[in-house]
Image (cartoon, rainbow, N blue to C red; front, side, top):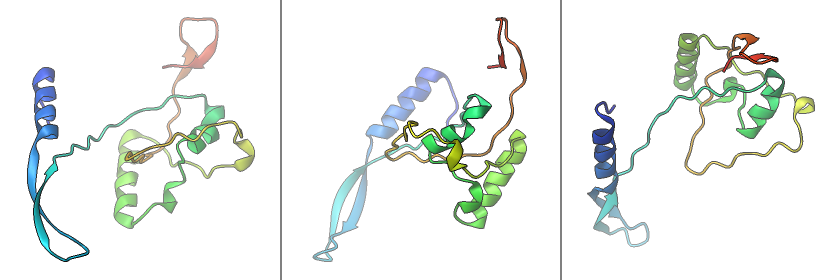
Length: 137
């Protein structure tokens, strides 16, 4: 966890990302160990709240390839997701109903990005200053 003044945090992250570390690796063909270097990689953990119309839940899930978390790996991961869900006051995602999915909804490709859906939570509804009832953003 990093904490501090924003520009100092950014400096520290750039320094970490550009630092080369020694790494001895074994050539799988010759079975000879070789000295080398590897660039330090940072994998941030970010928590986002996605807001969308409730009628679009199945399209949203399809777009990010979200499945009911009962299908995820291992009890440890399920326990962590259950704890996060409880802390945030959310519920499990339902199973996707193929009849409710719009065929034109694109799948968002992710390269080297994992999406760990925690759950769903209904927003407050009410007038937000305009003439339409909608969820408060």
